[in-house]
Length: 286
Image 1 (tube, rainbow, N blue to C red):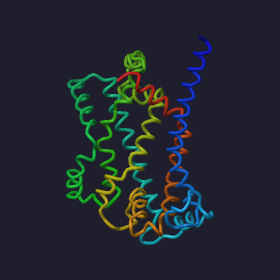
Image 2: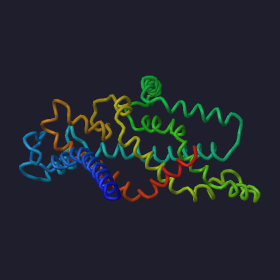
Image 3: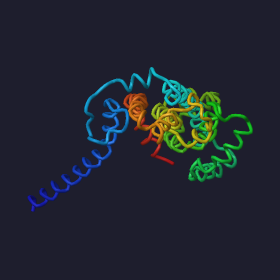
Image 4: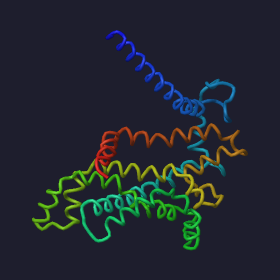
């Protein structure tokens, strides 16, 4: 019996690990192919073989140092970085402040407001993109970074639920003790809650940075101009693989994809511990 049970367990583990290995290979193969193409000697897509015939750094050099009407990667990178940093700061303040209010403060209509926010989050943001574009067009905020920053950060407070779940785990007695000592809600938030909330702060900051860094839909709507220098990284790289440009710029597109992923990868490696703690901590209570 023990031998049969051991054999069955071995088969189960083998199947699970084999399935995980297969899924990992399916996920990694396109990434590896993109990396190889970025170092390959071909300018266009390499469809002859998986590995390129030769390797070069020319595509990275052209991407960073040779700018033309199609490829202006340093400018795209700067545009996306400006939008992501401003959105990161503004959205993090909105999310953490809203989460604290919903978790630690009691006021009329608190629960209805929470329910409304949850319902609104069920609808994808791009459903309102036509109305949003019309408003921003009337205000003259299209074709620029300012409009995108406003759009990304305006509704960020609705994504407070994970942070609220984390704040719910902080003992109420700490806030009550501070209140007895005469501390205001602002002081309690800044001096007590935030120092104890490093994991959820890191999670919020990373999420707020990634949203505009990888967004294509709203950037495409809000930047209808054909001026290459005004594009974000997502729009710029997409323009490289159009039917007209793909044979000349595909290798640069691959190089750009590699360069764009480096800051995010470094950020995740450094913040991974706190990022996971923030997600799991915020999932304890809703």
